[in-house]
Length: 462
Image 1 (cartoon, rainbow, N blue to C red):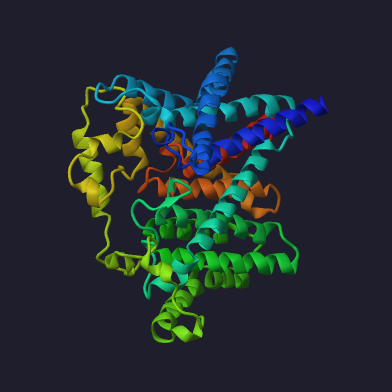
Image 2: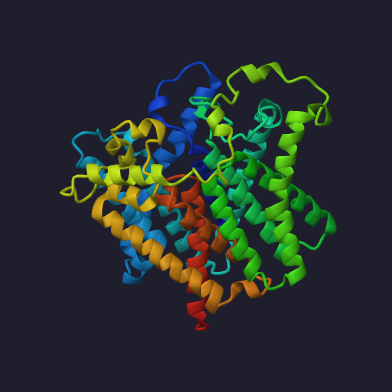
């Protein structure tokens, strides 16, 4: 029994990591093998989870859903994501302008695959081993992946961060820049990753750590990450971090007023001041930072070439959300209202046909608009249910069960904070509406939250 459980654990964790590693890979660019080892690796990164999803995970997941069909399961948010991606595939099949192939369907297939995996995990572990911590372990695996990614990107862009510009690095990567044959993460995604790591580490500092060394190390790391987040000037990430951070500090009952003020200063106020001071030193006293010459690589592909992108965007009153509202309007106006199931995954790129897509981006930058364009009316309803029930869960966690008033179940606290973060982010990004970093963290957070209430209800304590 124990041996079988260990084998299942290994399979689950490796499969879950495979989904993480597939992010950023695109099937259409990886079909042809070459002698380059990086291209071959990327081929397997995308096709292993795709093929596994199609032939193993999704069939098993659907069998489990049909075999143990219960109306109450349809109210679970992770069950709703099954229908969410299924309707997108129907929309793609009914879209005569796009072919049904891996290039157009892979995001929905991966979304179905990961959601089916979550349902299988729930069936195997929660029903048989009720105290199993597999979802919590998946959360920690996610953080490990993001931490490794952040370290790699910071090292690879060290020269850009430190030397290239006397201003900000909103455009730290240039268009079409590659990272292991994948497109370099944009500043919105990279800063999002850093913000998520900060929220995770701050939760551990508040509720878990006792060692002075560990607290000091993580506090320093968080300070550095917030320093970089401010430098990246992503208004979306800044808003998500600000809201989630304030919720974290306000509801952390084991922090007295003195420590809350220290938190506000050290993790919110001082990093931007430090960055502005850093900019002044880079411009006026560069010899005080590092007594070495600017590297020759600053004239290569990692140079910040767009001066307008280097201005302060966070405190610039001229920066507005007008661009996004234009994209929302175009997607909705281009949508054929007779299409019940939408146009298929990433339909917003298909519907944005004007020149707006060249200077504002080719995605709808809103989860609800994306859901409607990709999966039609049914996906729109599902997304609204996710917002509504998600808000209901968060209300119960913060005001009814008051989880943040005690020190236990830190994974539930982190999941709640992540869910808040991505609900806010989904207002101005597609976020968890498509298979992505946001979706993986959201689906795991939802699984942890929902299974917490399943456990409470089974004990009759709620």
